[in-house]
Each structure stands twice: as structure tokens, then as C-alpha cells.
Image (cartoon, rainbow, N blue to C red):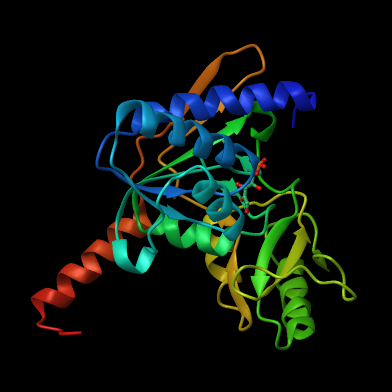
Length: 263
Ligand code: 5RP
């Protein structure tokens, strides 16, 4: 990871957030991510909404983003009312060349993944320090239930010990004396893996461990990444990928209707 000064990183985030606005239009249903880069986007969006007199629907991924969005006058809707979003714009802790991500440094990975899954397109915005050759230098956040968290953490450690990663040390975020609580009231275990060999498989396997609620590996979810550099350059990384979570959800809904399932 390239080390960049804080002020430079802020400018780079701003360049990326600003470019993301080009994907927004009147009437869109937008998922608002969490973290410092996502909050820069939220501010830019609020300005653009006023400037262009847009009418947009926003769904937030965390209580901290909700607070800022409301302060800025952006109306928020619960995901349960909107169901499907056109786009989610969110930050990341790491981005690999295949657009796989590590997220959850800010603790909002669960709602971020749910919102990304409900979105037709997920665009990641980040400063250039987030680009990595392979994921894993940033500890992987795993959201776990409070009940039996020590047992879950021990199973996670065992799992990582036999996986295609370079480490297996797991720590409760905040420590036992003052554990970090997510918006959903769960704990977060941060796993120092060094290198994550097969993000898609590992993401799926982590979620099979009872007690795990969700993990911060976003594999094959992002459609593109907008990366800002301190000198003002903006790079758009895209593999033309669709969002497989969104597509499989759409297929499921379609087949249920076809089969006459009534809710
Ligand atoms: C929060 C996240 C953030 O998107 C991630 O931590 C990046 O944050 P920042 O933009 O502040 O670097 O996943 O859960």
C-alpha cells in the first residue's frame, strides 16, 4: 500500500467522490456508504441535489452516515421500503486488481453488504492508498454475535489456520473490556491474514461458521472503482462485472412469482 499524507488522501478522496457524482441522476435510488470517503460523497451529493433540484431516494448504511445525511437535508428511506437500489456508492479499506474489496474498517460492513446486494451497481470510491496487489494487509473484519463470540473467534482462527491465507490471528475489536458494538448490536473480530488467496471462496466459507453474521470481504460485488490520486488524477477501474448478488436475488424473486409463492 502506498503511504500518502492525510491532506493528500483527503484531496484524493474528494476527487474520487466528485467523479462518482457523474453516475447520479434525478429520480435515482442511491445507497450511501460509510466511512470518510463515503461521507465526502454524501456532502457532494447533498450539494448536487440542491443545485440540480433532483429528487432522489437515499438509503444509508450506518447510523453515522444517517446523521450526516439528515443534517445535510438528504431525506433517507429505510431499505425495507425501497427494496431495490439503482446504485450504491461506498468506500473500501482495500481494493485488489479484480475489484475484490476488504471493507468494515468503520464497522458498517453488514449494512454495507446488504445495501450493495440490493443495488444494481456498486461503485467504490477511494484514494490511491487503498489499491493493493492482493487483499489481506488490512485486518479482515468479521461481524459475530455477542453470544458465544469466544467460541466463534476460536473457530475462525481454526478455519484461517487451514485456509489459503498467511495468518490467523483474530482479535475482538475494542477488546473484551470495551468491545465495539455494530449498529446491529453485534461484535467485530478483526482477522490479521496477511494475504487472502481466494477471496470469493473464503468469503463464502467464513459465513458458514455459526455465530458469524457477515464478513468484510466483498468479492465480485463492485462494478467499478473510482480511485483518486493526490495530484488530481482519477482512475476508473472496471471489469464490466455485474453484481452477482443482485442478479441471483432478482432470479429468486422471479422464480418465486412464477411458482405462485405469495407473501
Ligand atoms: C466502513 C467501510 C469504509 O468504507 C472503509 O473503512 C473505508 O473508509 P474510509 O473511506 O474512511 O477510508 O467499510 O465500514
